Structures are given as C-alpha cells and as structure tokens.
Length: 354
Ligand SMILES: *Cc1c(COP(=O)(O)O)cnc(C)c1O
Image (cartoon, rainbow, N blue to C red; front, side, top):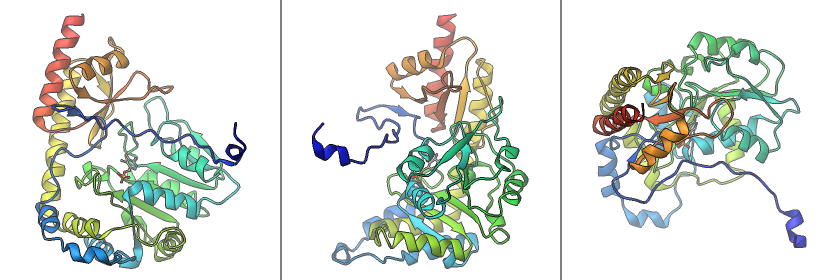
C-alpha cells in the first residue's frame, strides 16, 4: 500500500439498481414511475431561459419550497429541499444523529441507512422485522440516538399504520424520528399531520417515485420550523446551491399539477392490485404492498432462478442476495402492458418448469 493510502477514507458504498443501456428492456428494478412527469414539466423545460444559467440559482430554492409548502398547507420555514431524498436523508443523518447511543432502524430496509451511518461514524443497531416482515414498534421504545424507517418499508412494501408511527413518536421524545415516506402516495397515511405536535419528527418524501422525476433528483423534508432551521444550517455549511435552476422550474410544475398526480398514482395502484390477484393465482405469496412495487416469493421456484430467467427475457427486477430476503424478488409496478408481459412470461415459465 502506498503511504498516502493509509490516510484514505474507506467506505463500502451503496449499490444502486442496474440502469441498463440495452434497448427494449422492461425495467421493473428501481421503482421508477412508468408514466411521464406532469405536462407542465415539459413546458417549463422548453421555456427555460439559458441566459439565466450564468447566474447562481436561488440558494433558498424559494419557488420550489413555497410550492411544496402550499401543496401541504405548511409554512415555507417547515420545508427543506435537496438533491433527491437521498441527499435530504444524508443531511438529516449528519445534522441530527450525533449521539453516542445507537440509532435504530429495521434489519430489512433501505440499504442506504447503514452506508450513511458508517460514512458519518454514527453507531447503529438494527431491529429485526417479525416473520411477516412487519416493523415491531416496541423494539423502538428502548433508549437510542435516533430512529429512522421507511413507511411503507422498502423492499417489503409493508405499511405501518399512522397510530403505530405515533406510538413510536410518543416513546421517543428525546431524539429525532425520521420517517422516510418515499412510497406514501401509493396508498399509505402520511405522518405529516403529526409534525405540529412532535417537534422532533421529520417526514421525508421524494419526487422520484410518485411524481415521475427520478432523473431530476428532488427530495424534501417537512417538520417543525426548528428542525428545518438546523437542517439548513448544515446544508449551508456544505453546499449552498444544491438545487439548480432547471430542477427548480421542473419541480414547481410537478407539485402544482395535483390532478395529474392523483391520476397517475391511481393508475399505478389499480395495476398493482390487479397484478396482486394474478400473481396470487400463479402461486406467489407477498404482503399487502402499499407501494409501487411488490415483494414476492414462490414456494416452488427459487427467486434467483426466476431473476435470471427474467433477465434473459429482458425483464429486469430486483434481487437482494441478503439473509432473510434471498428468496424474494422486488418487482416495480410498470404500465399494464409491461406487467402483462411479465405475467405472461411467469405463467409460461412456471408451467414449463413443473
Ligand atoms: C427511492 C428511495 C429513496 C431515495 O429516493 P431519491 O430518488 O433519492 O429521492 C429513499 N428512501 C427509500 C426507501 C427509497 O425507496
């Protein structure tokens, strides 16, 4: 090892889902939205004044913060925006998880949490989901340095009811509780109504899934004015200009169009419920996902075998080679056509195999 290498910060990075370059792929592996963003987004991008790009963007991202605040009936001092919720969550870890006590999150969950904890030297302890992949809320009642969990959880798709989220809050008045609601728009009850009563609650959401803008990178946190102020102080100590002008213009249009948002979420929910019925008919089992993906297992066919067979067919789903979930596939809900292709292949494959 060269001597400079002894001073290199070594980390094991998060591995994002594959973004294939091949054509004619049915891509159901990263929970992207199969429908285009709101029509206003395209208009805003076409009307973009490139001369303005000479200037730095507004560091406070005021137009986007205001649009989000208005949409959820909040003050703009209660909204923080970042480069995808990954950026927002990382900023939350850095700002709020500075205790010597371990932060708590589920053993099966978004695989970025332990990466950030390691990156920021935050001690953590994972709490096992029960055999039905449910979060056991009582596990989070013990003393800790902070709590973070996705609701619905990923990659399981399981939703913790709002009353149970509130129980976790009631037992954790002394730490920040981060609820990562990346998938909440697909049928769950958001913890947002609780932010007025729990100053230590942060609700994090994203434009990547329900608003069809994964490529734009917009995430946001909502909470008390006090927690948002602390987040902004850390952000301004790191990078003042996280949101560029193009992102701001597109983001505003995506929040503004409530009816398009409702319509596309509704379509995905309807497709999801139909695919649940069909997969059940093929012998798969899975929980009652309230997200835009299903987490499925088959009693007769190993998940890895199915993953490889689907991959050869250019249908890409997500497989996690991790304990407890290595016999599961996470399948994003695509368009009805994409899901029909998936179902047709599975029907055939399972029949020929038996
Ligand atoms: C997709 C996802 C995110 C990150 O989304 P961004 O694209 O960074 O906004 C965060 N948490 C969970 C649980 C996710 O599934």
